[in-house]
Image (cartoon, each protein chain N blue to C red):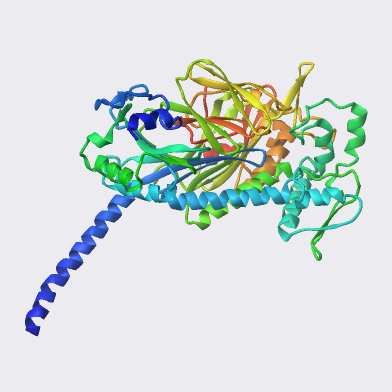
Length: 347
Length: 227
């Protein structure tokens, strides 16, 4: 009897094993075929944040997206100068009065801002808050107004990254003058994108594009044989794309004079203010920078926009791919952008 | 409840189809596909999105759509809605109850398991679609990140009022494109955003928390735009 059973098992077991293996192969082949592309948009950080993810598991994507948006909301709550209770508004409130204890995260982002300020010789400066307030760019509930030139000059005194004092030992930040105001608008969005991207990756989501108001992190590929394709808007015809290029595991950010502006007496007054003279930059219509992180791309896009194409192309200190569209509408690529990303200009 | 009534009440779900589903012949919706590839859109209103996604995912695995790259989007809806499933294939609304292929049978089973159609108070719209006819299909209008209206791309030309979180904005629809006609906000940035007509494009008024995006399948030359 036992012999018979053993014989039956000897025959049946390999058959069952073979069936199980076949079913698994069949199922995994079917699973492999199913690829979902999921897009989600939310209003966050004063702009629309759109994420497109490709993965085989929709519910995993949903969980990852929820966590990524929550993380970006957390960063906004920490770094926005408009939000009461944020660490930045706390620093601004005690400007000229006393140092403010902040989280290590806020201290690090301010420290990084100072690095970009030094690199850009002050063209990128997060202490620009009082100047942005004067023009009305910081507040959604105000009309952009052309300020009196004397007012611009006097407000410039409160702009200067050297008067931001950070103390690493007790993690405090102090603004030396009571009229100084931090505005991290030129870097915080990039940092939030990096944090959101890290959160997506922590869920095992590899292939995605995270776009927050035109600043983007691209991870992985659209599919096995195809990279994601990014378009750059035409600054004077914003429904048109002027340049396209492919990207993989890289960030891109654009600063343009068409996002927040008002035409007064035929002159365009936009939100990218030059900390040297207090007026909107006049050398570029838009500047697109590519970098390993969105934080870096975001900060350097402001810098190169204000520097203008001629000086930016001569600047060899930063080995960064970029493109600038001059105020005459001419497109200037630096050699790194051309050689590494092969951009195509569209007619 | 009869499906005709569901379609009349489910304004977000295939809003262009009012009545007519009682016939077994498919109803033509949008323009024809530009090639012979299968184009489909499966829209579901449900109060159990995670479970529904799992069930639909299993149904896809044994369907003619299993080799396609499927686009998925999820929208939280406001108010009470009628939960049900609507399948559009090659521009025709399909009454899957009258077909016996594997996918239709699975959809019937899913609808029965959820006792669709039924009223739900916490509705979510799930949209699965695939194909590459490139046709934009809807203007999706959201307020404070909740979908409040889906206007077919071929909606009547005119100006439509949308109530935002602070005040109204006016949306102008003209020849399958949309632009913000007026807004109470101070900076008027939304008015400068121009018009949208291609899948993936969007308009947004931050102070009023209103966003309008074009949905549908896309064959654009780019996946995202930096600006």
